Amino acid sequence: MNVALIFAGGAGRRMNTKTKPKQFLELNGKPIIIHTIDNFEYHPLIQAIIVVCLEEWIPYMKNLLIRYHIEKVKWIIPGGETGQQSIRKGLDILWFDKTIPNDAFVLIHDGVRPLINEDLISRNIACAEQYGNAITVTPAIETIINVTATDEISNILDRSKCRMARAPQTFRLSDILNAHKRAELEGNKDMIDSAMLMDYYGECLHIVEGPFENIKITTPSDFYIFRAIYEAKENSQIWGI
Image (cartoon, rainbow, N blue to C red; front, top):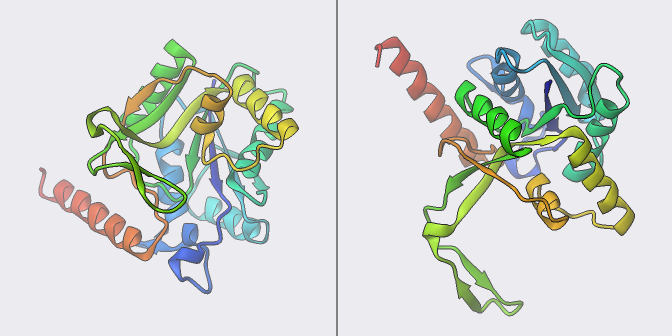
């Protein structure tokens, strides 16, 4: 069984939006979060979706699901103070739901990362079935450096060996939940993402190459990039390219 866990608990402070969190901003009459969910809603290998949302926006989220005829979202729950805590809350819901097997694969994905596609989801699932997990990545296209506490360069990495971790990130439910439990017991609350968490606890991770356009919409410029890519894809379909 494959379940998508979409966390959309951010308030969008870097987007400079005063009325709506960034995940609810619209493009072509559809909120970013719905653009994201649609990729999982219409994928034949995804059986269920859980959305972790800002608590005060849950009623709004429920109305969106009705408006856009989303049927696979089975749970909408309030998030935590951090992304790590929000994911943990979602995993707990899945673990205690008797309809979800402990060895189900969970595709953890940002609500504001809408430019994924069916092929990427399929390859995540195939990789996880073969190796136990899958981390979406893209090649590093800029020079990556390590710096010291005094902002001096300590190391310049070989770009050809570097990848940028993105999403979805796919794990067995039991594996990722156990890692979260260990982190909680040890007071590790600041893991950047699930890949970092699993790597910290010794999991051998396997990569799936994703498209460059699979960006996370965090700043106003990200939104304009999303709009440009989305409109370019729409135009290519119109012209049959």
